[in-house]
Image (cartoon, rainbow, N blue to C red; front, side, top):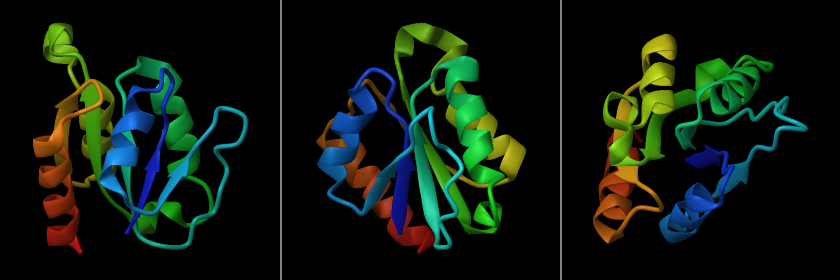
Amino acid sequence: MKVVYISLTGQTRKFIKKLSMDSLELTPTNPYIALGEPFIIVTPTYDKQATDLLNDFIETADNKKYFKGVAGGGNLNFGKLFAFTAKDLAYDYKVPLLHTFEFQGNDEDVAKLKKAVKDIG
């Protein structure tokens, strides 16, 4: 399964490297990629900056039918807004929230997300 992600500060990119999974980084200049294969999204929490970009990607071509789940990173100091973007996407697109992690995650976060991806398979 492919991991689609955005990394506005570099923290998410560092987490994705630890996953060692096939991945695609979206950029603000071109979110309109027709993927054509099952994917999960890993996103940081950045209100409209992340949400609008990811919505554009999900709504491109038939990406929505391949969207299998979402994981979110953030800062626990955000309180209720921790992993907000991932929670919002899970709710809007009715996909599972697979995992949340702080900053660039740790080995336990990597293992939990890999297991969750395997479970949705």
